[in-house]
Length: 271
Image 1 (cartoon, one colour):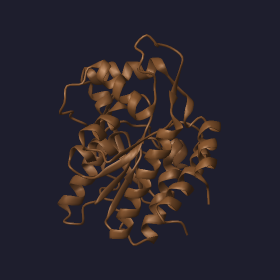
Image 2: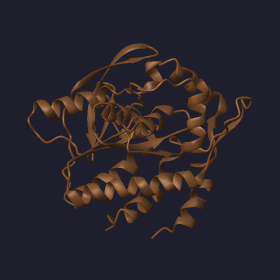
Image 3: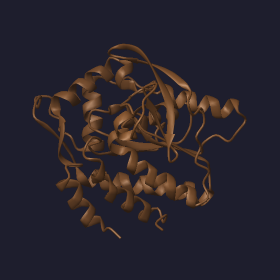
């Protein structure tokens, strides 16, 4: 069992929190684009409130611990580990409630290279607790707008966790899963679940468009987000995302294993 103190130390040592690799320039660019309602950073969220750049920065300072000084424009960004720990506690609470009620769940990631192992650990535990882990629309084509134009990807599942791959991709998921911010995969999956007459998820777990896209459609959604992903925290502030956990979402994949153990223990899902 991993103690809170041990996890705090791990967050700092692995740079999941504290000084992180995400730059201040990246974060500020995302805040500007979010204020301009650029779809690339909205991640499927349609904000109800008016958010200018200063509003977004103030929210991110409150939820993540980044600087609220508009004069701080370069260097490394910072995440307060206490905020990460508090959000992980809330995240675990939602998982525990879903398991206790045995609701169907859906998990998906736009960061398969880094976060797939974190989510598969959750999917395995939720399945063992009696939750149906949904995998609708497997193999379905999804057209996603990228900086290279519209590209077609295939929706796939690995141990119950959704991701997108380029057509014809073969080999390990870590080498073929695509990084994506798009909400289109979760929309396709949810539409297929509904059209098929099967159960819809009582909880969606993930990141990027998987969380914001599901939350925008009225599904309970929880997930992880970096300092340059303001949409999840805005969604949380507006009540469409239940929990957004601030942490660096692009460190080595094995650095997330202690988080899996900690969350499952706090959710009473450890085996």
